[in-house]
Image (cartoon, rainbow, N blue to C red):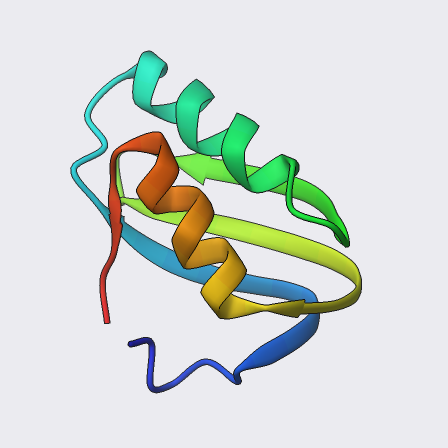
Length: 77
């Protein structure tokens, strides 16, 4: 999973999410990731399938993957 991304990160990291196609997808992913402890902001680009997450303290990428899964989508590795 996400071999190019460190296990934990601080600052901005961009992830690729599969299955997002509309504004509903954007809202669902944003809400779930924003609820992860340490996440400061979430920017979803549906057209490119990317999500940029900014964290103000260490966040485990597994927590991001779980949040995306909860929203009904998948992080691409």
